[in-house]
Amino acid sequence: MNRVGVIGFPVEHSLSPIMHDAAFDALGMSDWLYDAMAIPPDILRLGLREPRDHGYIGINVTVPHKEAVMAFVRPDEKARAIGAVNTIDFRSNIGTNTDADGFIEDLRANGIAPEGQSALVLGAGGAARAAVYGLARVGAEVAIVNRTKTRADRLAAHLKASAGISGVKVMTLDEAADRDMSLIVNCTSVGLHPEIKQSPWIHGVPFPEGVTVYDMVYRPANTALMQQCVAHGGRAIGGLGMLARQGAIAFELWTGVQPPVDVMISALRDALEEVKDS
Ligand code: NAP
Image 1 (tube, rainbow, N blue to C red):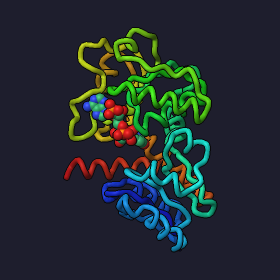
Image 2 (image 1 turned 180 degrees about the horizontal axis):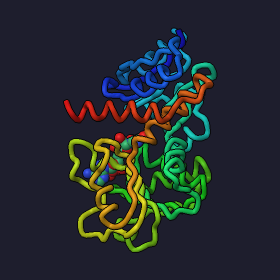
Image 3 (image 1 turned 90 degrees about the vertical axis):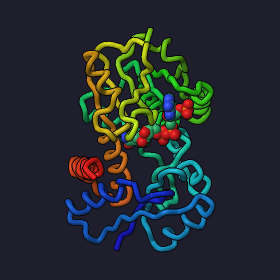
């Protein structure tokens, strides 16, 4: 049996087993197993040793371990720039981060070329770091707005020091609204279930017309921010595709096989529908 999985705490809510199992099923890879392991933060080092010593090929890493796990693996350039590891290959002990590539790939899959976009990233946490890194790497112009401005300043400084990315601007939402922009990426948790009526676009700030919104929040599928965007003549994309694509990159890394992303997306959609109905 080839074993892979995800560590987190808690981890029961993770959708990763569902999408990886769907891909294994679709490809007839019945000798692969993906499981979820709850590892409390105070025993992370020991918790990592368990799957490694038991022959796991690799694991995904989710909240709250993504940053702390960097001390126990060899982080690659992406992980160092983003400041977090979400995928480990135990064969090399390299830790990487697949969020930036998953996000950029999903933009492309939706027919959006990120190159040359004038992008506004809302948020300055882990998801924002991946978005800013991914966008800046392909040549988009990036501005960040975050509730806590100092955190956005730290994000920009970190990307400059760790990946040589300069030119990322930090501003207020009012300042951002006065500029031309083509793409808004929500990397805050505002609008996430159950607070589905909330939007990170503060009331009173004029919403730009005809832009594209990419909302990393995928529950609900159509967030308040996405609805605002469409009401202002724009196009809105939810974050489910990114979730599947960042998982698909890890899948290929471990197995050497390209998974069917459409199967992973529909498995995720079905799972979220079930949660909604329950
Ligand atoms: P995080 O590190 O905890 O960052 C949360 C961000 O949201 C911070 O910028 C925070 O601002 C902001 N925020 C939280 N509550 C706010 C409020 N009431 N008003 C304004 N800003 C607020 O979380 P993360 O890991 O970056 O994840 C952020 C979101 O992205 C989550 O919903 C997560 O599910 C989603 N995500 C999706 C994918 C995907 O594959 N689609 C991947 C990763 C993450 P402060 O700095 O001021 O606290």
